[in-house]
Image (cartoon, rainbow, N blue to C red; front, side, top):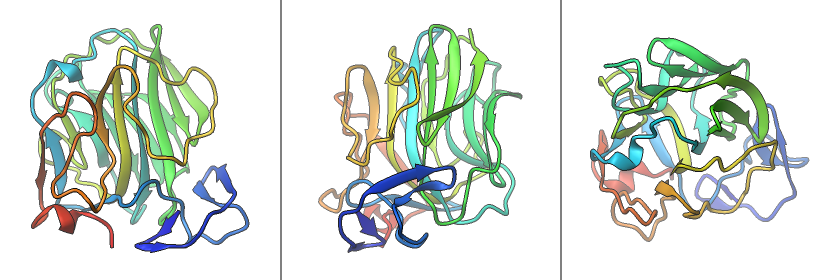
Length: 239
């Protein structure tokens, strides 16, 4: 695992309400997957192109990622969203609101977990819809459910910002995986500390490494990602 840019060793890992961290360690030695995470400073974001891969319809879906907030004093910070959230009743967004986690379907809150974000601590989040039920998992634990027959019809993904250009995120994000047509998790699980892979039906996979020269979708779809607010790819990575 890495602490900032330095390799700090191999540890047994516990996953608690405040985030994934080494067992018996301190909060500064947080767990990260892979080599690097993307740092969002409140004025930067990533966006895909338009593609039906991100039109979930009424089927099963999974959106998951690791996140580490740089602060919890702000209201309504957009972590990931589709492009229709601000426009229709068929869009979705995952927010950090102070230290609370919320998933909205346009103007309506559908899933929430309170008091879960801690500055400087990594947390795994997964939104899963399986057979018409949406579940919010925080560090592998099902925290909320919602009967969800929504026909989600967006076709673009924003990371670190809402589609209308507001609520930019402040913190680090890593291991973004979007799966269309499959519920990856249907019960409590232990979030993997390994790099996520492109499993069946993966439509977007972001695992940045220092060997890359640009933002890359590692799924078979190979979507183009556009970064805004950084001078180049390297400047988007944590040190």
